[in-house]
Structure formats: C-alpha cells, structure tokens
Length: 57
Image (cartoon, rainbow, N blue to C red):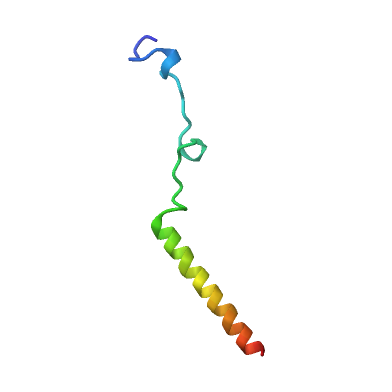
C-alpha cells in the first residue's frame, strides 16, 4: 500500500481496536496489588463470619 512500510496482507490495515475491545487489553484486575487487597477483604469476611457464629451460640 502506498505510504506504508508493509503490504495490506501483512498488517498495514490490521486495525486492532483500542481499549477493552482489544484482545491484549490489560484491565488491572489481576495485579499483585489487586490480589493482595482481595485477600485482605476475604480474610475480613472470614473473620466476621467466625465472630457471627460465636455470637449465635
């Protein structure tokens, strides 16, 4: 294609969509910080359930 360094068959107009529509989009839900926060929240939930069970007895 005129004005491109590759032909139309090899990527000049591949047109990968930006943002969440792109298959390689990184959303940040599985970062180390997000996983650590999720673990803390789950620990608090478990602890609150244990306290609730103790109070019901």
